[in-house]
Image (tube, rainbow, N blue to C red; front, side, top):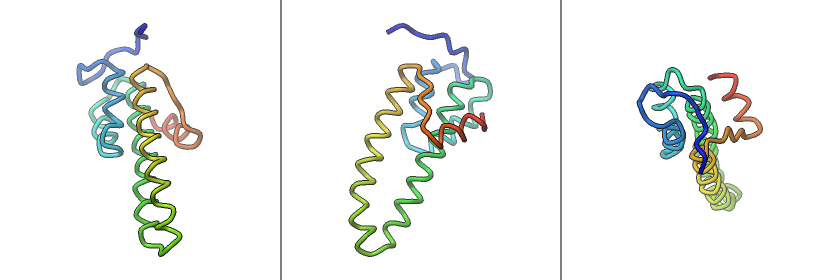
Length: 112
């Protein structure tokens, strides 16, 4: 795989590894990498996108647990969607791609 030059990171890691790790534990590692990384916009973008996407899914999951029947029916589908999205985002980050999700990616881009 051809490595793109994404610059240096504050942590000393390769940018693609740091971006992948920002998705590893959802919004938690997104927050960590967002505050650790001061310079690299690639890592900050993926960290912010992780915070937005997985923060939203965390809140949605919590709300759906409180809604009888409809929420309980939707929860397994949301869980499957979350796992698929999590894997895709980590792969795209590792491949050095700015994979921008429709709404979350725009917000993340404005906040890096």
